[in-house]
Amino acid sequence: MADAQGNKKAKDYRIETPAPAGGFFVKGACNGDWGLKNRLAKIFRPDTGNTVMLAFDHGYIMGPTSGLERLDIAIPKLNPYVDVLMGTRGAIRSSVDPAASKPVCLRATHDESILKEDMALGSGRGLDIEEIIRLNAQMFAVQTFVGSGGERDSLEALCRAVDDGCRYGIPVLAVVAVGKQMQRTTEFFLLATRLLAEHGAHAIKTYYCEGFEKVAAACPVPLIVAGGKKLPEEDALGMVYRAIQSGARGVDMGRNIFQSSSPEAMCRAIRKIVHEGSTDKEAYGVFREESKSAG
Image (tube, rainbow, N blue to C red; front, side, top):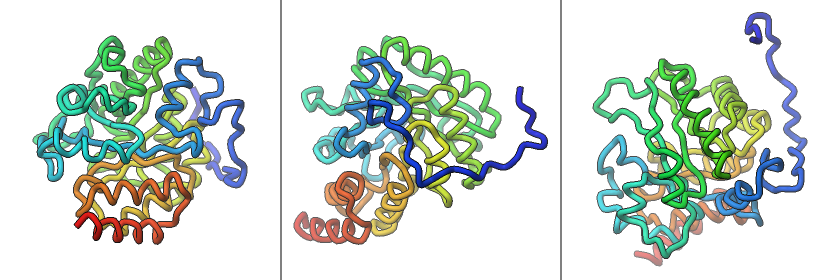
């Protein structure tokens, strides 16, 4: 095992040098099987290499939240404007039209509810691979805790999930959980994202941070940035723009979409940045115009 003592601090990230494609457009997936690549090509758009995911899995720990009181009303309205649906099996089965044919990233772990004082103690694998296959998920998400009491168990769950995913050609999204006591620093996210990639995750959902270009360069698989807490629309679009400019391959937005004053307009504005190369100011202009039209 490598000795952490006396280890030289990393500094040569070669940010200006893109990762070699290796014959397939998704970073780090060139050696994957055909089925795994096919599913990744439904998660990430081949023409841009990016994705806009709609996260609506909050209820599995929070219960009803503003904007998601009625999944059966909220999700169908936003479905046309996103690339991927990120939800739980209960939400997918009850509130998503199977005929909509939108790729699904299925939440596959269970966690403690917000009633617990410290939620960052670990999570368990909630779904077996047969259930994931039954739901025809194109990807499944595993919550991981780095630097907390639940680290060992969540990394074990990730390893077993990657075993299952590789066996059936279904990519695994490792989700970096940040507890109340964890600092959202460049150093933490450099460690967490690299650690999860080296445990076999095919993509990683993480948070935007200062120095994100280093995090993206050092991680050998795509990074998808979480929306996090609700921000004013202009600030949320600014975060999306900075993340994409710094090397993120997409965003997984929840509250910053469905708690927006105009969720559909917010989706369109995010797509402008992620898929069309617009600046945050241009996208905010789109949001304002489409909000007026919707009103």
